[in-house]
Amino acid sequence: MGKEVIDIVEIHSRKDLKRFVEFSFFLYSKNPYWTPPIISEEIDTLDQAKNPVFKNAKAHYFLAFKKGEIVGRIAVMINWIEVNTLQKKKVRFGWFDVIDDMNVTKALMEKAHAIGLENGMDFIEGPVGFSNMDKAGMLVKGFEESNTMITWYNAPYYYDHFKNLGYEDLAVWVEYEIKLSSFEASPEKIKKFSDLMLERYALKILDFKSKKEIIPYVEKMFVLLEETYGKLQTFVPIQKHQIQQYKEKYFRYIHPEFIKCIANQNNELIAFCITMPSFTKALKKANGKMFPFGFIYLLKALYFNSRASFYLIGVHPKYQNKGVTAIIFNEMQKTFNKQGYHIVETNPELEENSSIQNLWKNYEHRLHKKRLTVTQKLKKGATT
Image (cartoon, rainbow, N blue to C red):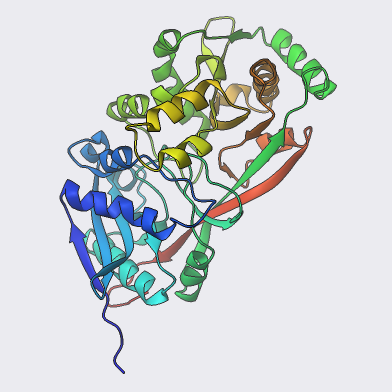
């Protein structure tokens, strides 16, 4: 009996991008832990006419077919800022999903390798997006936990496929679930330390009551983000034209009181934290569609919730390891208690980021998810 034929087809149109996005809905339709994205938002992210990242990037999208049925997908990307400015000759892959058939994974990855070689790249890494603001990492722990709106979900066999194909682990991220007590019952040393650091460095908390008040600080946050993470292995500078796109994509999900900024005595922004109410349940109800009811589910989640997710934290290097993260979490604790929140999930944190993880040790917590990227050198004439 002959080997089953796997056809890898490159796609271009928005109609086919919709099929590309909807494959994950087919693959995980019966999985209670998978949180679907909003289909239109996913298509806009991948559409070269919609996403300004393509001023500095290119992408190819492939679907895998077996007997006429879609059995896998992959986005293959090159970020030219990363290649030309950072001198990392890397081809990226993301939006990767497959059935449990290693031959499908192998066929898709061979296409990704070919794109990398055609463009003079040295190695491949994924799953990642176009930049640090996109989803990243393959789940390797926490398969019975729901993904948040800013992370991917995948089945356990993905990692097995890549290991069998000889890929090596690269960046590793961990995620924590933290239980929130009342502010009065929260760790006393955190509260005292927070007050001490505010006084010692003459810092002040900036609270926001409306989204309009946040707008003047958005670009400053992105500048601070680069200052915070610029030296990490995974960071690629975010271009100004991308800031507007990220603001438009996520601003609708922002609750003003869930953003905290810290300024020094010269009114310079030295730290910020963006937290969001959890949209996991709302996204599951919406099932990829904003209309007719999806936006209502999301709006309810914005104001009626008991679970939150950390999205971004930035601290200027001059103030790192000086207790600023304790100040941020202390202030967020007040907001969480006021709003009736009981649980907060961290965003994926690089495993080596011990300074922030040490903070969670003061609270009841559990490391509930772990994800990583895999890598392999590109070789002419070689297959995965």
